[in-house]
Length: 104
Image (cartoon, rainbow, N blue to C red):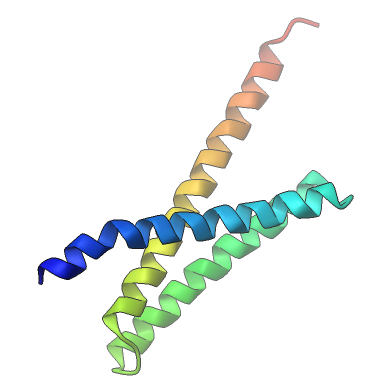
């Protein structure tokens, strides 16, 4: 039972890499001429899709069609996507508040 616990940090790193690749997909769209709003919308949709994937994996595991490993991976990816979305939201709010404090 020790091996899965030791493997957990590597799963988190893989999930972080997946979240980074998803975020970079939004950056690529921005550099190709798409607007910031569209890139942000696309990143939010990807985070929602990751959450739905975690729900699907959990449902499959409950019915005996999926493995616990798939559920752990899917939930880890969903958690990282949620943490990333929360961090981006906090930065946007902070930037807005900084702009509102600027003297005219």
